[in-house]
Length: 487
Image 1 (cartoon, rainbow, N blue to C red):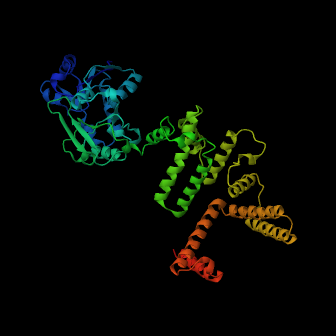
Image 2: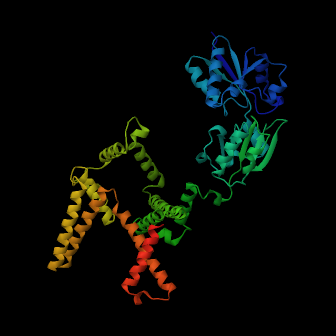
């Protein structure tokens, strides 16, 4: 039993570029198999060789993984009792999935797999484009191309652009990162007499009829940094430069403590944009929040303490760890089970605390902190069983507040009783899944909009608010309220 497969590369061009040893092997082989016969050398040697090609498998299957699997399966069957030669375009170890499968699967099954030479299309492409890969080079497969993997500061070569459909996918992926009119180069049959090089704007990439199984797409390095402003790496570099030796004096002076108030402000402005359902405003405010995060990370890096990579790694690990139903084997039925698992995992991660309430951040606004304190206590059963009882507690606290006012004691006691009323109201809202900060922010906006309506109406009638009666202003308030309700 032979079990030997010799793999050779047909190179990227004409017969004159084919190594003599490979030429002898394919012309003398009695059992020659080709991944595809669509290659200039096969056309030239058609009368000198006998072969079996796998083009029909491509025609029968839309899934390339299935194509490669069937080709490898057939090759292993053929080599079970005879030595065979398998020829692929270019070099066997460059962009050849079937070769990698043979090396792994074939050797595991006891086959002898021998890889011989062949000229890679990469060399011919470098020569055709007159580029030097030392400047930075990335080779990617068109069939598995993902936008986020592209390194557009260097030379990018996208191989296996078989047809216009693949070219269309490549175009759409590149358009996620580059302008529609960015100039790219279509390289077909590099290094052969049929070599064709054509530069086109990106939007025309899939309109070229010359695209075939010898086609690659070259994306030249991006020189205009503004084109990459959407990438996180570019933003990170901008922030680093702001805090660099020649950066902005204000940015260089900032510390974690000095930036606290800005982070709070930006978060509230984001909440306002969400409340307004203003997408453009949300984009802007999310960017401002991101700026605060990256600034803090840059300060950490400048101080030699941590970097944004540590921040991202920590949250990525946490998300995987706390979602075992997504990244592990845990099975959940609904959101309640998800939240229960999350809390259980979170408790295991936390350091030993003297109280379960210690996990509630002391930096939260008072209303939000009240909400989360109550929520933590409720998880161990310290909660009114029904919402009706929480309403009774509100009434009780209001009565105590009124009694304190009647007694006319000092302001400190009055303030505490008023705080109890607010705390009880937060508890009512919690039973209805209402976050108090969000609710109050919504009311603040509503108050602003309605009061602004009163101001505008007064301006229209050349009136000053201080000259208007409360009844007049209240009438305008009700008009604003009606307009608000009617949308």
